[in-house]
Structures are given as C-alpha cells and as structure tokens.
Length: 70
Image (cartoon, rainbow, N blue to C red):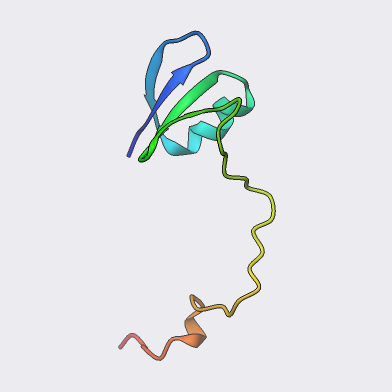
C-alpha cells in the first residue's frame, strides 16, 4: 500500500508507509492523504508514536490462546 503525499514545495508523490514519519520529521511533507481526506502536517491531527502502553489484558500472547498447532 502506498500513501499519497504533497511535499512542502507543492509536488505530489506516492511513498511507502514507513517513510512517512521520516519525511515529516525532515520537514519535507506538507500534507498526506488518509482514507477520510487530506491531513495538513502543520495543523492536522497526527498519530503519536510515544506511549504505546496498554493497560488491558494481553490477548495476542500464545499462552492465552486455546488453539495449538498440530
């Protein structure tokens, strides 16, 4: 899957998702396209990567699953 971006100079490009945060940090991206529309980097809602802690039960660990591969 590629993400459509608009560079700060007004040109457009399609990039791989893992490059988006790199280009935003470098100040090269002015906006990018999400499923619900364009997000302006300077003022749009951004997902933050910082605190990824989760206080709920862990449901993805193998020992919590009753299914065992044969």
